[in-house]
Length: 201
Image 1 (cartoon, rainbow, N blue to C red):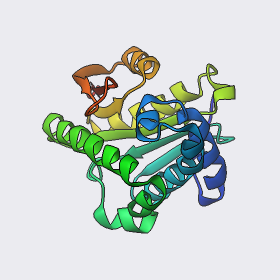
Image 2 (tube, rainbow, N blue to C red):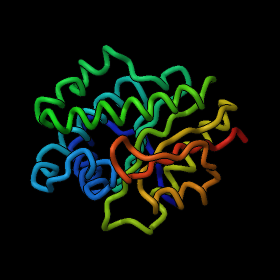
Image 3 (tube, one colour):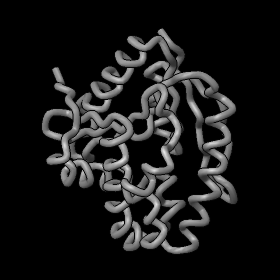
C-alpha cells in the first residue's frame, strides 16, 4: 500500500526536485523551453511557483517520501486565482523564461483555457499536474495519487478534467477511465494536447 498525504511546506524542495525531473522531457515543457540548459534553470522556478500556488489555493498530495506529487484544483477553485498568481510567484516567471517562451506560454494558455471553459461548465476536479521521480516510476505511485483524487471526486459527485501533451501519459489516463474530450495541437506546433474527462462515478 502506498500512503498518500498532504504536502507540507517542509516538503517543498523535494517536490520541486521531483517535478523538475518528471517533466524535464515533457513535450509541453520542451515546447516552452526548447534549450535544455535554459530548461534546467527555469523548470525548478516553475515547479516551485506552481507548488506554492497549490499549497495555498488548491490541493497538493504526495507519497510518504515525496517520490510522487499531485497538484489539484478542487471544485470552486478550478480557475486560477489572479491574486494567487502574484503571491505564488507565477506572475514573475516571465522574468526568468524570456520573451519568446512567455509568448509561447500565453498562446498555449489561451488554447487550453478556452477548451477548459467550453468543456467544463460545472464543478469538477482539475488535475493540474502529477509527477513521479523517474527512478520510482512503474511502482504504482502515480496510480495511488490518481486513486486518491478519484476518491475525492467521487465524494463530491463531480467529474475530473485534465490536459496532457505526453503520449504515454495519455495512454495511462485512458487506462484510468479518462476519455478524450478534445484533441488539437499547441499553436504553431505539431505537439498534441489531449483534453480529457473522467465522468463522475
